Each structure stands twice: as C-alpha cells, then as structure tokens.
Image 1 (cartoon, rainbow, N blue to C red):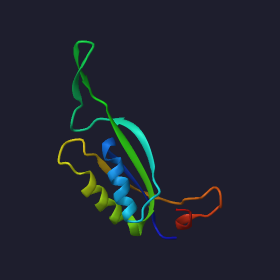
Image 2: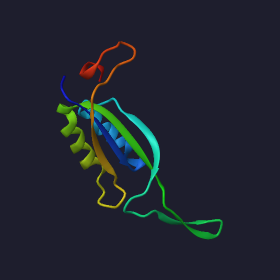
Image 3: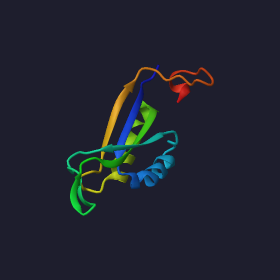
Image 4: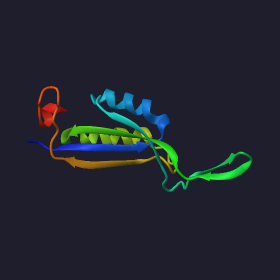
Length: 115
C-alpha cells in the first residue's frame, strides 16, 4: 500500500474560498472544513465590549482536513503556502500526519481506493 497522509491547514476563515478554488484546479476536491478557535503569535486582539477594553485571545479560524496520496502532498502544500500567505501573524499552519489506513464505509474500499 502506498503512503496516505492527512493534511490539516489552520488559517483565516476569509481565505477558504480562494484555497478551495486553487486546490480544485489541482484536482483536489475532497476536504472537511471546521470552525475552530485559536491563538498563536498574534496574541489575540483588543476590542471594546460593553464599554470596557477586553483582550480576545482566542480568534476564529478554520481547519481544513484533506486525506491524500503522498504523491499529491507537495502540490497541496505549495498551493496552501502561496494562497494563504499574507506575511502577517495569524496566517496559520500546515500540519502533515501519516495515515495507516482509510476505509470507505459505503463500499468497503480501503487505502488509496477509498480516497
């Protein structure tokens, strides 16, 4: 069985559509998207809430999860890096994890056939 990877991309929610379109041009259409909250180097932001200045240290982000063949991994990384980079804190992270197996429930297919 060839290697299968899970790519997790955590980034700004306003970047989702451009990332989705860029990945689709490379033939990558399957993904799962979740709303998440997080903080990193940007250390949150200051807002006025009920007349008081408050630091919001968990900011809204999205997490995109893609299960892919290792052969498409570098293309996904390059698309994400070029599409999501603004040069500011909060651009996000790309996390690559090994996957031991994938099973499609409907058909019982396993491995790359299930992707």
